[in-house]
Length: 546
Image 1: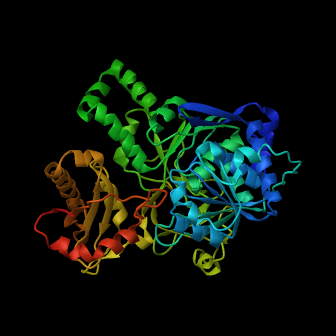
Image 2 (image 1 turned 135 degrees about the horizontal axis):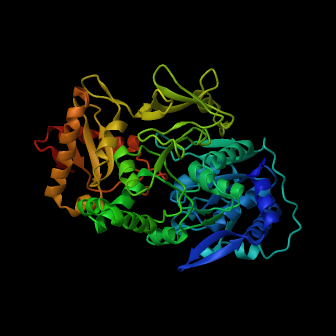
Image 3 (image 1 turned 45 degrees about the vertical axis):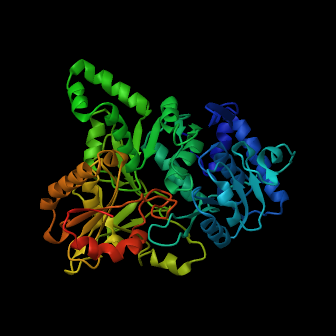
């Protein structure tokens, strides 16, 4: 594999090697629009020149608000070619959150791509230049398709490893989003390391659907695509996602636990578990069934399947393993540029997030907090020197906020979040994550939040899955009670679950109870419901419906 120093150097290498190679595939009305490397470069260069013509200077901040699409990649290339610093925003943010980040980040312009409801978001944009992509119905004074027609003799910026490349605002599970600053050298090292350790082949096929405004997709898909000269495709809509993925059959695939769970639910909706077990027990039929299921999922050509963002149940890994799909858990933060711990092909240990990647040193504090050191740690939080200092130990290690354990082979397991621990009225601390992970084995449960502040024993707040609701209230209650009954004997006395409370409404990004990266906002859930804990706890029934 080639060695590069910057993303632009990598892209220009592949551009020179084969300018007509398909780089981006964007589905519109069930047809893929394809952009070659040359197409993408020319469009990006014209956008970069246009931003300079609007009065922006090298080093200025340019925001990007869009779902994953071909123009996300081209816009990011434009920002790099212009010598700007990118400010990616989650496409699900409301107008107030958009305004807060744009003002705080001092963004001088914004590029608007594919969105579901731009009309409700645009009032959050301050008085700065806006370039909107007409292909996705974005109507602004500066239209991407018109801008790229304008001739420019703009000379592209030459990236240096020491340059600041981006400020990425965290999704804010425990508070307001913070702007994480990263250098070009960090993106370069993580992408290069990923290609090496995952043995990613040149010009592979990729599929991008997790938010590119999140560090995992930004590095794991966008940067690796740029460095490996890959072709990347996108889904058209949430509804067409399975069909789009199956048509692409990518070579690597990243997902969060809930997606792996959803895939499983989809398979079992067509082939019940008992029937699947019977079919898989028949030697010749076994291979046919596995190939058919894996092909329908879009995973036939995958050499590396990864799961991150939240713990993945070992039982789920084992279920996929029976189909020939080996899911490797990974661990990393925005602050460490996800250069942290990975399970790698051939050395996958279920229930862990793997061992440190090359260039990473990790250890535990006296309190069990995971500490990380590498050359890819963030420069700091933008305009927040005090919060930056709080994130680092005296010896320069990054404080992750996660509690962990190492086994005798050096594999790391995540025990939970330090801030997620709560104390019951008995004065005992409870770490919710491992308990929630055990309950997540039940496919009737969509989201789970174990709580217990102000009461003597923990209770669990539950949002049922579609499968759970379809069973009806009585059967759902039995399913939840069964899960609690199976788990409680394995827990310490102060951890045993007293009640389950079924939420009447879902937890979503829109109502602020999920982050854009699909993690529950525990602090907000608690703020809304804590006043009800005592009442729910005192009910006679074990499963309470809100």
